Image 1 (spheres, rainbow, N blue to C red):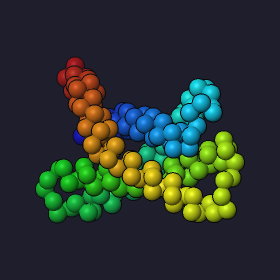
Image 2 (image 1 turned 90 degrees about the horizontal axis):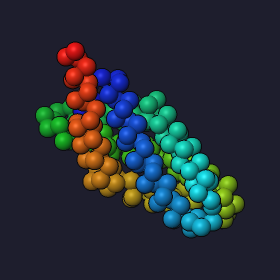
Image 3 (image 1 turned 45 degrees about the vertical axis):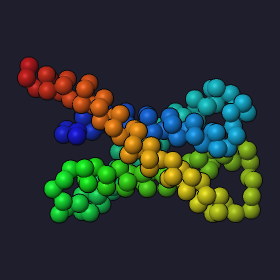
Image 4 (image 1 turned 120 degrees about the vertical axis):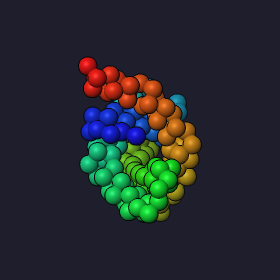
Length: 162
């Protein structure tokens, strides 16, 4: 899909925005926070989550996910396998790190609710992973790729022709 650093940046911005938006709403619902926090607190949670997710995507999870996925699909000539491998590796990495962020924000809003932070973390990670994987593969991935091909890549092609 993206062929340049600039295109990768745009693709990552769009993907992170969509995934973090849906996952923020999902986590607010899971924690029963609708009606308990203000709209501005929800927006600030989203913006902080988006910033963290985008930095992770650019510098930590994204590069490692791509390396692992490309190694897993090195013998495959089908691009769909590479796309699915990258998406799956990204979801695993992002769910791992963003669940830490989610747990911290839950503790900030609700306080500590149990004796085992580790149990709560793995429960949250599982819930986030179960939601994020199909969201990434079935919903956001195709939507972002469509938007990217329709609006971002044509501009890049036009700029190269001029």
